[in-house]
Image 1 (cartoon, rainbow, N blue to C red):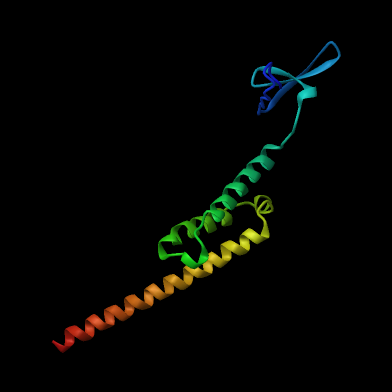
Image 2: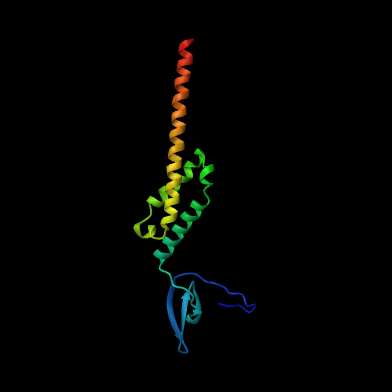
Length: 136
């Protein structure tokens, strides 16, 4: 609705019922009546939930550091993003652009490389420590 100062106010909620007064339809939302003429958009709750979940996932993918500066410590966020995606329903997954999934896969692969390198360094360090200790 538009207020007296010209500012548009949006109301969101479930339509509880429709009432007709003077041949005009009004929507009851959150115990208030709004003219059907002011209706902007209708969303199915499942659609809106899927859209919001996908939007949140994409925003978090976009906040990942540059792939060239990705560090081992970023692995937890990459793991969390993969978990979110894997727990999404097939319907929810349709809201995520394939380009963003490609980006997430690139980051997942890079984290795997960093973890592998860290594990190899740890093995080499343990081996060096064992050799140093045995020379005595």
